Length: 177
Image 1 (cartoon, rainbow, N blue to C red):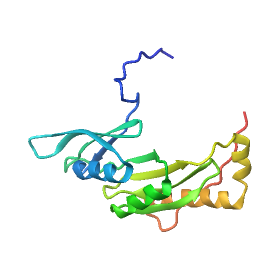
Image 2 (cartoon, rainbow, N blue to C red; image 1 turned 45 degrees about the vertical axis):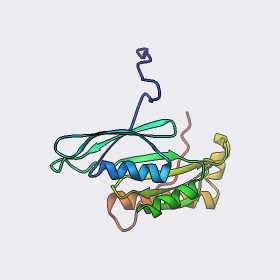
Image 3 (tube, helix red, strand yellow; image 1 turned 90 degrees about the vertical axis):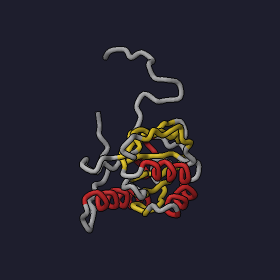
Image 4 (cartoon, rainbow, N blue to C red; image 1 turned 90 degrees about the horizontal axis):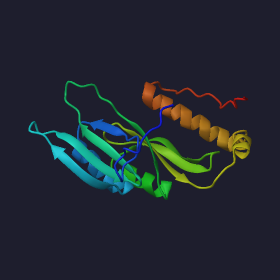
């Protein structure tokens, strides 16, 4: 693998998400309100759209711009770590998001759920609760409470993305080397 030089500007990550939306201004406002984002800038274009916007959430800069009407919709699926998933989840709903997957504790030592924002993007809103060793995680996945949380997480996302009334799920399988 070729060695990569450090060509990433300070304050940015090597890989950054782009969100294409019908209303980037409102998207930036939503991210500020819900996740405490710090808007870094927005550039309007002569056709009245936002051609470029940036907002920092934690250590990540999310880039965004407006979709032209003849472009296909391109919603994003994003995971955001927050200090308190319950609190951020409540803010997301109050700001117009709708629940895709209710909050639950996971076998991975996280608590989270999914919200679909008013722009069609799905946010996996997560708090890190505890460090969990791999062996413990696999043990927990056999626990009915954690297994049910995994099943619900899979089914609700599949229902949302597929439009089917009942989503699919498939139990995790440990791969052996």
